[in-house]
Amino acid sequence: MSDNQRSDLFAPLTIGAIKVANRIAMAPLTRSRANMDGVHTPLAVEYYRQRASAGLIISEATNISRQGRGYAFTPSIYTPEHVAAWRQVTDAVHEAGGKIVCQLWHVGRMSHVSLQENGGAPVAPSAIQAGEVVFLESQTLDAPSMPRALGTEEIPLILEDYKRAARCALEAGFDGVEVHSANCYLLEQFIRDSTNLRTDQYGGSVENRIRFPLEVVQAVSEIWGADRVGVRLSPITRAVGDTPLDSDPQGTYGYFAKQVGRLGLAYLHCVEGQTQSDNEADAFDFKALHAAYGGRYIANNSYDRQMALDAVASGHADMVAFGRPFISNPDLVERLKLDARLTEPDRNTFYGGGAAGYTDYPTRT
Image 1 (cartoon, rainbow, N blue to C red):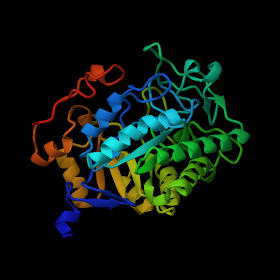
Image 2 (image 1 turned 180 degrees about the horizontal axis):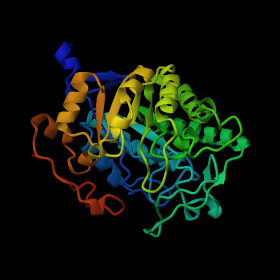
Image 3 (image 1 turned 30 degrees about the vertical axis):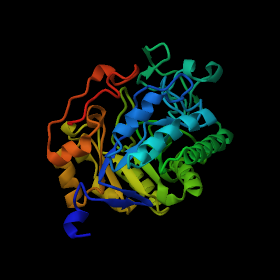
C-alpha cells in the first residue's frame, strides 16, 4: 500500500483484527425501532443492509440488560430472541460486504422507573438525579427518575451482565463490540468526579473511578479477543440537561486511554465535543488523548467531507464516524467519494415509527 493510500479516507484499513473497506464508520444512532422487549423488527435488517458500504458500522447503542435500558424501543442483546433478531442484521450486512460491531450500553441514571423491572429505581455510581429527558413507552418524554447508588457488591453483577451481552453479540455474528463509555451513561458516570461521589474502591481517585470501566473492557476482551473490542469516550460532552464535566478531563481521560491502550484493543472512538460549531474541541487535546492510547483512533464530531479527508490525511484519525448523514444517505460512502450532494434528514422521524425516515431514503441511482 502506498503512502497516499495510507492517508486516503477511501482506502482499506485493518483496525484491530477487523479488515475494513474504507475509513468511514457509521456512528451509533439510536432510532427507537425495536419492540418493547428490545427485539429488532425486520425493518432493522434492511436499514443496516442499506448502509453496509461503510467501512465499519457501529450499531445503535444496545442494552446489556433490562436494568441498563433508559429509552423505550431501543434494542437489547441479552436473550435468545435478541440474538436471533440481531443475527439477521449481521448476516445481511456481511452478505452486502460490510462489517458491524455491537455497541454495549448501560444508561445508569439516565432512566425512568417505568422502564425498569417492577418499577425499580435506576442505578448509578451515586444517587444524583440526571437533568436530561428520556423517551418512554407512552411515546412521551419525561425527566429521568431519581437513581439509587449501587452497592459495592452489586457492581460485579453488572460486570456479569456485560459479559453475557458480549457472549450474545458473539453468537449474533457481530465482528466485534464497542464498550459505550461515553455520552454521560453508566460507565462515564463512574469516570467523572462530578457524577461519582463514591468512597469505596470505585470512587475518589482517578485510578478508582476508572476501575469499573476498565474491568468491563478487560472482561469483554477476554470473551472477544482485545483486537475486536473498541471503546467510546466523550471527554467534553454534556448531555441534554445539566450533566457536568469532570474537573480534569484531560488528566482523567488521558489516564483511562493509556490504561485501555495497554490492552491491545481494536480502536478508541471519541466524540470530540458537542458540535464543531461550538468549537469545544479547542478546550481538549484529542491528539494527546490519541497518543496516550497509542492505537487506532476513530474521530466523531459533526465532521464534513473535507474535515474527514484532512483528519485522515494528517494522521489525526484512522477513521471518521458519520452519524446523521448516514440516516438520510444510505450510500454515504459513494456520495462522499464523488463529492455529491447529501440529502438532509427529517428530524421528525429520528426516533420511533416505522419505515418512514428509516429505510425509505433513496440512493443516488
